[in-house]
Length: 106
Image: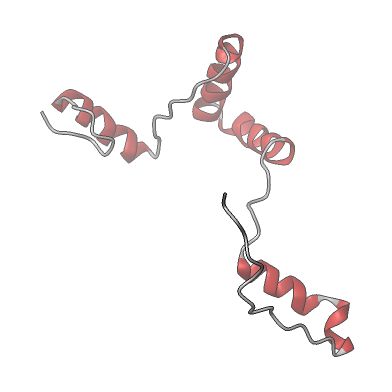
């Protein structure tokens, strides 16, 4: 039997199902959650999958209430510093290139 991307063995029937789901633009997601939250998560998934209008409203609500901004990248930091009011002050910062202080691991 062929292996999927996670090394599990899959049958031709499962492969056909995955191809159809992919063609519809859906994917299967497995998560571990507290048992009491399973009905809620199933309901959320059903809404996202079946009710386009409610799904849009639900996505907006979840994105504002739950989704956290991704960690800042180096590019974000550079843009922030370039937009800083300190940019015009002529402040010069030089990186400390010393090897640091001695440390005894014992």
